[in-house]
Image 1 (cartoon, rainbow, N blue to C red):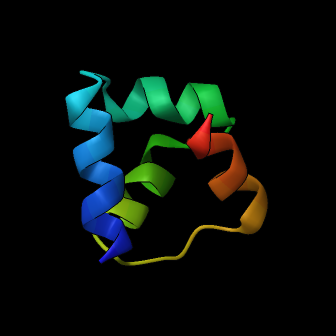
Image 2: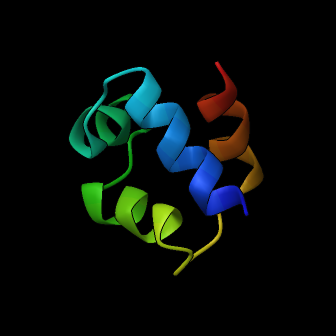
Image 3: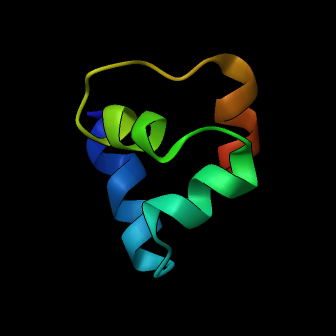
Length: 51
């Protein structure tokens, strides 16, 4: 599931949800929702997250 992959990638890089949120210009709650499968990423966020 993509939610698990997002969380795993973040924790491997030792980043907080807040740090990822700041890098992507979204809220920490948005990152939490992605990681918990409550919402889906848009294509722009997917591309930014891949960097």
